Length: 162
Image 1 (tube, rainbow, N blue to C red):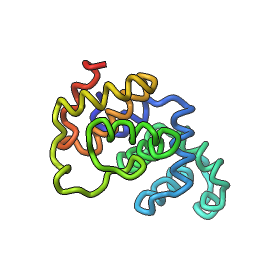
Image 2: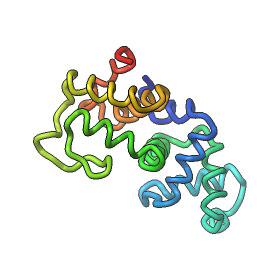
Image 3: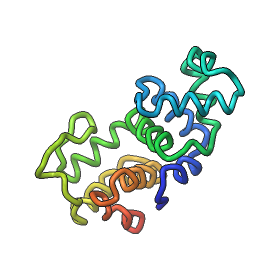
Image 4: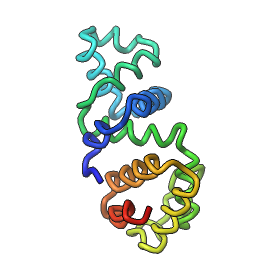
């Protein structure tokens, strides 16, 4: 497992990066939008005003081609990938581990905010492996681990369970 979003982003193939960037620009998080536009400006050697007016598809293609985005932006793109086409995976996993969610997004629940138990994690991984390609499952487990290592620490062992 990778320990940073930047390293994980660099391992994605072109199709995954493009999908992540496309979903990112559908509802860009304001806290990292400036970083994304700055990366586009630097990569294409254009003015910031031009970067802001590019069609979202062009913005996504450019962002997908950049390998070193910085940790916050890489993390946001990895999340965007999973909130897009791969959202059903999130619901499958959260249902299997018994965590409350809404369409794959965790609900704020004080009782469910502690570290995930190994038994629950194994059930979640098994449910994913039965329904999705292994590389997708590995990536999703890694993204969860990077997002909150304390809560998802048990997932560091998940590759051994597949």
